[in-house]
Image (cartoon, helix red, strand yellow):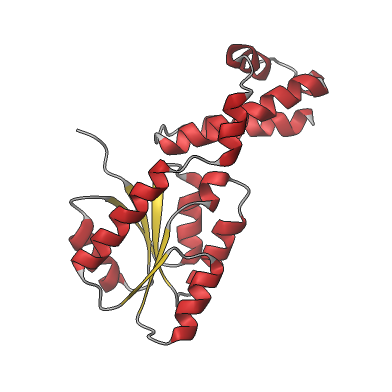
Length: 201
């Protein structure tokens, strides 16, 4: 049986989170977050997440700030992560601000199951079809991966010369994309590689 798509649900209302969990739990693996900070941590350290559903008005970090951090992140997969805002605010300014920050969609509370489900499915399908530009560029000039990994395993990464380092940097977008796209769970390994690259630069 295929893994369920993973979604982060950020809302400071436990009642709202449990209601949505009951609506969608049979179709998706839902990671709950009580505020923007908690949601951000889940997004940064779990490459299996494919979509974010977030409230706007939350303590510590609100939905606007969370979306802005996502769109400003260096990781291409994070930048393109689908974000659906849910809020009880019916004014146009809230909606406009959400879209200005980079939200993909906007749903008013109270939330209907069919509307939320259809919106999530639509954005997941679009996200899965999209391949980041850096990945296409990297694949078109893919270096010898086995050689690259051998270099990364070397005991002294500080001795990697500029040419070899450039080859490794060209591989990284592919590793990031494949890890996130196929939910491989290689976050720690990729983080280790990136640290070794920083040591060598």
